[in-house]
Image (tube, rainbow, N blue to C red; front, side, top):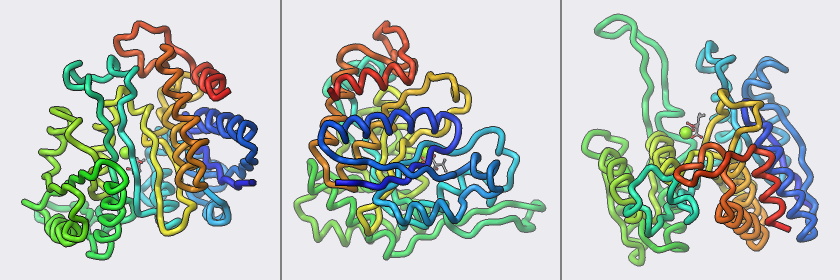
Length: 358
Ligand code: IPM
Ligand code: MG
């Protein structure tokens, strides 16, 4: 079978890590008899440099015409001076919205070999943890009304958060369905003691909870959730939360797994296409030096195989290869932890994963 994939390499380490994912997919294609065809499109800072806008229409059209989308990372200091509408990050929000990707799955799972790379005490991570963060991705404060105005103290800036019951219900359903396929525990994270949007969020989640009696449901305030994640990550199975809280908690959860360089993500909508990207950014400080950890990107490609194409054996083959390579002691600089291993480059780590795939 042939699969057409839109490839958005982006900026910083984006091109290096997408190169790794392409190599892995090519190897999987050969092993399992699939043809993965890649069509590159510009996004972010490189698009600004080439054509003057962060999200060219051609990129949106190319993604819409594809079977799925792989994205590296966008942004960097070169474009930091630009105004909000022109920044590379705007392209990321734009493509998520254009493709209708309202559900963002961010799995934070501790690979047994990386226990010593987690900043948590050994007794807290010995039992491992496997958390699925379900982040709302096309609403909330990221997309609300914003601007500058005259306020009590002179000029002020404002951003607003709005959530409709419809948006909360559809991310809620995605989360309950995700929980049903896992350990059936769901934590909804909000700030209902302060925010009106959170009160509607909580009310809607409670209505859904009544429809899913098999799921053990709890509410948690976001400040408490941030604390509980480092106190006892094992207590969580699925966490559902808003766009901004999900952004913050997924970075926190990623570090518990050893490094943000380990966390993949799947952004899903009503079609099977989706978009697959690591949760980390473009890491301009190490870009072009062959130092980046390609694992989050490679695991994102595995998620694409599973969710977009229904190729679960192929996805498991990639995940097992990553597991085996970590168990064998290979480490990029970010996940050395207490292992004492010498740092692998991005291409060396990729080569080891390719070998393990066979
Ligand atoms: C992420 C990133 C993005 C976000 C930025 C780059 C706009 O932090 O995917 O988590 O906030 O969604
Ligand atoms: Mg983020």
